Amino acid sequence: MKIVIAGGGSGGHLFPGVAVAEELKERDGLNEVLFMGTQQGLEARVIPELGYPIRFVQASGMLGKSILQKAVSVFRLMIATWSSLRFFRATRPDIVIGTGGYVSAAPVMAARMLGIPTLILEQNLVPGLANRMLANVADIIAVTYYDSMSDLPRHKTHLTGNPVRASVLSGRREHALELFGLDPQRITVLVIGGSAGALRINEAVVSALTMMLDIREHIQFVHQCGEQSFERVRKAYLNMGFRAMAAPFIREMAEAYAVADIVVSRAGATSLAEITTLGRPAIIIPYPYAGGHQSYNAQRLSDAGACIHIPDRELEGGVLAAEIRKLYGSEELRGEMRRAARGLGRVDASSKVVDLAISLVKKGKNDV
Image 1 (cartoon, rainbow, N blue to C red):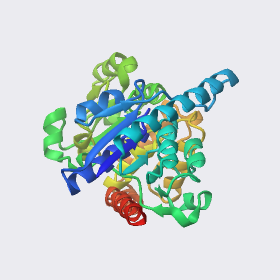
Image 2 (cartoon, one colour; image 1 turned 180 degrees about the vertical axis):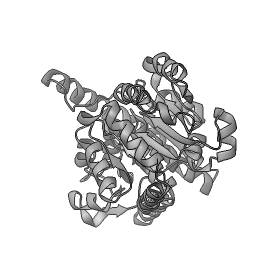
Image 3 (cartoon, rainbow, N blue to C red; image 1 turned 135 degrees about the horizontal axis):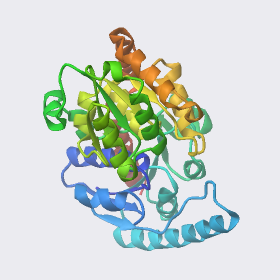
């Protein structure tokens, strides 16, 4: 099959597509997978590194933009749709899969115009603007949460879970301890603020360290902090005597998760899918400027007992230190959260999405 996966901008819309691509190649090495994204998004760097071809389209979001910026976005959408039409006419993919976000809009609409089967992924509890628009266009919608189904056409919406890269699930604790230079006897806290770090979380962690000096011989950190905060975060750990591995960006996420006893993270859909699939106790701080998606995601996990939810407006060093101490001090609580998290995670999400894609392609060929 020839498959186009459209989406990106952030890891939340990119990595589920990568997980699906991995499953497609695992099923049949002859499957051809091509990504479509923007030159400004994370996909421009990540996809070539992974060895997949990528075609760039002009696209930009509308959320929180001025009227003029929205007009520019609409114009870019029209150009991107026309460009996608020409490309699909020449290449004739068997299916186009949209992974959400503004990047996926034009390719999915162009595929629909040409009668090419389409499938979209909705990672968040509340569907985003692009997927609400595409819901009436796509042939199949794959969702992460059952609660999302009431906001989408029920007859073509399937509960699959959010695809997680197989590589993320393959980490080994022993290798991780060696890789990051960690002590196997200590509780390890993994701090991740997205692919670029999270300034608010970084500052809260630095402040929290001053309130955890009494347990610094029993706790350690792996911290993805982004370029902007790297030196400040690194020096804070060093100056206060904490064992830590701080880095602008962690490529070895499988190992980072493998060694984590506690995770501190934003509430991006991909991060939450990884945390729940792996069953990691977590402190979740939603990014407040994502249209409310992350707050809904975090509340869903919190209601299930799978995380501690700290709203961004309440985030400060003392609050974060208290919650880390709570999890550090109770193996029983960590165990309960692990079980609750695994109850929400879906290891077979990629497989289910690919099953739907294959059935859709076969149906399309039978209808010809």
